[in-house]
Length: 406
Image (cartoon, rainbow, N blue to C red; front, side):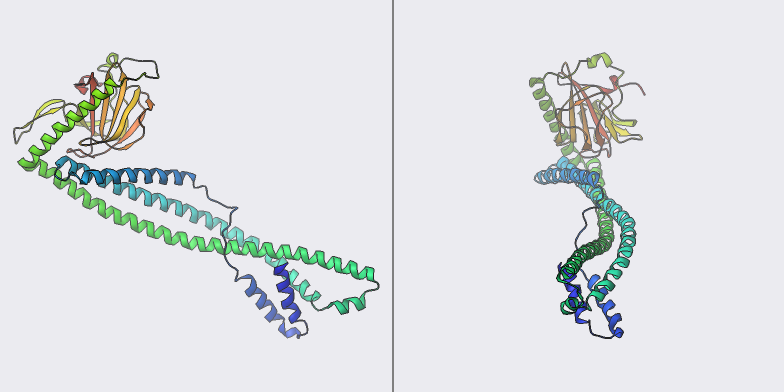
């Protein structure tokens, strides 16, 4: 009964003052009610589960990107490592922009929720305020009588006890009403402060996203400058070709390891060679910029053995599995960016490189047409492309002979 006792003591101190002091009493009570400490409300919560899932996923991706960037920085003498690092840094900035955007989206959602909640709370408090005013008047009237006056007016001890009992019950009920009112007032103040805080947070997140957009533009320029250097500078070009040959050898070794580490496929096998010439394209293709086989550079007369093709996406950045299989590899690979290898059984594999994001993980079973990744440009000298290979017993096949004719 602490809140009630405070009110009663305050009223009793004003008991013998003139009626001219009653406005001061009302003012004092108003100050008491509207200067309460703020505590958060727990009964109204915006569902933020989806936001948290997205933010957790982005945080995990950012951690992986930062680890890969650190690793690539240790190989600064490598042209492809520099190219890969620039691609990773661009992807990192994009993820950071996405994180800020998601956080701002969540803040804006909470702002909208509070805009609805605050008027409701204000309306509810207005009704309770009227009830509180009636209680205050009642308490003030009771406060005019002390126990001596009450005993002199009582007809008997029994009636006195009865009167006191009723007063106690009334006081307890008043205490509950007052406590509820103060609690709701605290919640309203909390909601108002939270609204202002979320508005400030939203503005700060927008500014951070804009700053990251500027950083992204800088990284794009650096990436284009390096690709141009590879194309225009004979020394850099030859170094890049040599490194690309070494990366292809490493990929060859990786697929041989997968061949030696045979697994039982958990599905009814449909042999890939029965689909030759009828496989769906992994992405809708605008054009093929790098073809399979030996390619000669028109300016430097250098040759490169391409074990796959590079496809420029047409209208979708979604990479899909071309056949059922199981993911045997999903990780960053030097020269290929984020790389996926799918085992289709009978020593057939498909390879998907330069990806910017995975939708599958190692050991996952996929069906034809399942989304597995997002097209990117990490490790690519051709910009945003998908690197695609088909292997049988570790030997590279010409993908254009396996894919449907466009």
